[in-house]
Image (cartoon, rainbow, N blue to C red; front, top):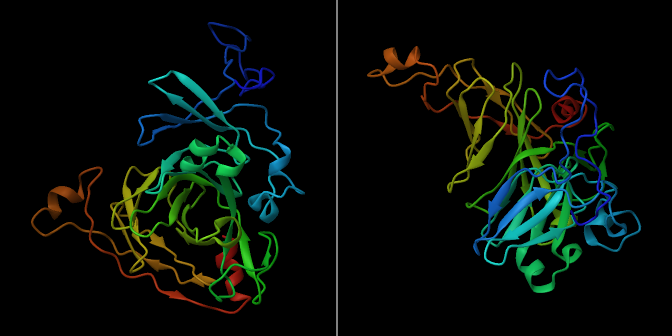
Length: 321
């Protein structure tokens, strides 16, 4: 650890005595190391704590850091570290945002999930050139372009009603994070129920200008978890049911291998209409065998999800889900 006084990651006492260790707390990890990811130089980047949860001053209100000006962050429980196998040097990278999963984009920017109310990133090139973690990192809240003017401006908070003249901030913490090779946007899966995927369009100054889109899976919903994106920009997600689902923003179509009639929404500039995906069937040649096979991979295209704008109060329900 960078800081020797870093607390143990799990300080809770055992809920029940162990048959082997009784009430002894055997978990002693401070780094709480999670996801690892290679960069193009063969170094390994980790989501790992380097200090306690209280953030340094550059993360907080009153800082001149561009991201802190836009959205200050007081605490983060897991940060970044990097191991160079050639030199065996372990480098600590203090981040204002929490981390969980890591993915590099084509420009060597490391995007992270686990930030809760924000999505954070680290520019590896800037960090390598300067060694300055504060300068190399940034984060953004998730702001929907509710008023439909194509830019980010004043917004209402998640617990406030929609204002037709302003944008809307949402809380949709990323579980998986996935930079898109198709257009440079960054996607994340939201591990809530019924679940959602979120798209961030970073723009030239993402701390202040990034806009978000949220695509909700309406009831009965599915417990979305891991996800990734292919080179065409199609998001693929695993569902709690053991099936796969895909979503293509270009034509707002959802596909799923689950036969329980899922549906997906595509809010842009306010809300969208829920369009159920039809029962999915394999081709006539294999339908009989696959219809009863667990984990069937039928990918019959769904009906299109229709996107529209609407005035409040009809937007409120869609945006607050």
